[in-house]
Image (cartoon, rainbow over the protein chains, first blue to last red):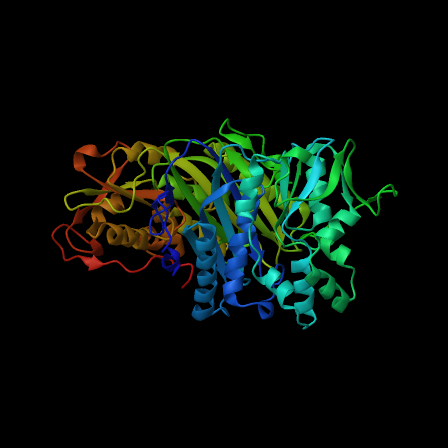
Length: 301
Length: 301
């Protein structure tokens, strides 16, 4: 089954599916390595997407961690736990979605594992390389906060699906997110610290602030200027604030980085600043009192 | 939580838990990479072992794939799906077992992922290196079949636990298996093809035969000579044939290799031979008609 997704095998891969383990060409640059899981009922409900989307999302969600370090994905392994009510056709569609994502990311799935279980889960591990990966620890007072990509659309899409409402752009953002690999590589030599927005801008910013031991202030007018029109429309239809979706909705896999103003890339929008202190805050308007940002979505809450 | 297991961080590890991904030192030797999962109710039942054992087994089972290629494990990532009925104490014990295994294997757990789910599963990915990994494809007629480690004990232990019977050595073999990393490295320059016995000697031998496009013949008297006394005793108590446990019982993580007689290491016992043809067979006695070996335990059967 998994062998089908191996049309796209890079020169990095010496041995793939069919042996005890995958064998990759060694490299002198640093290795950047992550693992992520999508569990049915926790991360998705099968009624909300096609099986190809489930496969696509699983690979992009994992690869996004590499984007957040400015790394290039080299290869992936996929471990599936498959319940008996998932038929062969559905499984093939899921693997097809992984293969589509693998091609889009230039990151072949070179092995994996298949097990029975009660509950469908897709665990994806992605290995990549980067000569100087961007960590979460490099943010310093005086730097700007940058946003690359959009936030809130995927959360809006998920809510629209829950309520059975339409809104193509948002629903597509949730069903087919994209790890910002190229953008991450543009930021690699420019950003001092970086994270991907998987759980929600507020929570992920706080993680970035904690890791760097600084205070991060999102300037609300700047963030609002960065929000797409589709988000405002969806927010209105859902009866929620677009700003809340942007701050607390995850799974868009945008990148947030901190860096010096003169190093900002054209793809990055300034949404705030780094100060001395700790925590993540929102400044409603210039000169107004800042308010602490609460948690993003926590898979374990 | 996962940060606790990071007492043993090798110089290979530049960034571990706390960032988007782990960062490892690059290396010019080939990278050998695998992923494996333990699912509660499929691979174990919580009544049969302590939580430390669950953690220990998960890491050794994954590392065994690297042993089978003669690779040295460098680091691991652990992705846990945790149901609500698993308390903090149990989870800590599980992670402690992973840490024990990590120290024993010289393979620190440098990151991971935690998610809610209905069903407990532990997915482990292990990255290692080897300058010339041993593949499954190198067996040729004229070579011997070698066994390193024991087979059947773990299956006997599992059956004893199922039936509530005693048998310390077998039960321990199932609860605390050991990836044969050092043995794999001894065989790296000697074996032409190698596999670890995870599903059962018969099935794994057939996979080795298929990958190398040869025929493998297990010589029953040779294999029986290699079986430990504890296995015969357990087999008697269980009312099953020791040979069946040895051929069809998995999870001992012994190594089976093919190689030239003059290259055999002292730790390897000859249990058969490689011939032209295909499939895996048993020769009951010298000169007797050989019989095809059936399947080992298949997690998806």
